[in-house]
Image (cartoon, rainbow, N blue to C red):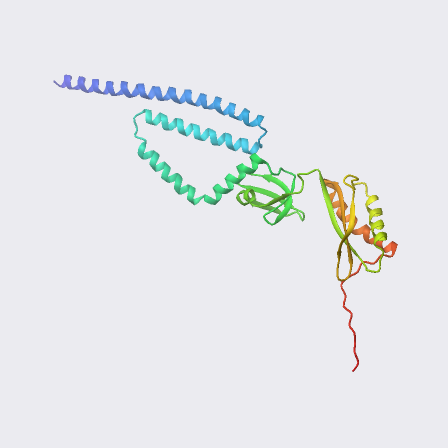
Length: 273
């Protein structure tokens, strides 16, 4: 009797091991084949992204995201194949994901903004931009933040969420820029002489473009001066050089020509009673 009992138990154990052993073997095969397929898919996706000339940072991040997502899906499929109920697990995972998403809403917004910036590329590394109250050269574009270096060499980290949704000026996007300046002369000074003096200063700088040609005109009859607007086109890298050059040498040329640059003043009249 004992022998028969032992034999029956052994048969049951053998049947259990045989049944689940086959399932475990199938899961192992499934995982091996699945990981191989995922590797091929990721390689293909990476080639497509490289051919699309996406940013290297975005390619690396998306590749990692696809890899984790596909492998997680494969593992869930493998576990469910073993007969483990996944309904409660998936519900718990969804609730945890919702809680994490609400806690990291700002971070996720910055992430989404970073993806948009890296795909649409409104600016690139090295561009001179103005955004979120800061002006400087783009030093690095990351998934969550963009780093710019200001004119006075300060490192500013701007969250991508606001950067992708707010107004931004990219001063480097066009090949040429216009230098706009206003010079005031006295009411007794000759306007034509002042225009000629400004034109001479412009012509002496090799960065000034002839097309579009420079423009000089009266923009305002102010309280103390006649204001002349000056517009000069230059290549983008020459903007600041031309800006500071005009400020200095127009003043020097006015001094040579005897043209005054008025400043606000008050006349006080004394009346004796």
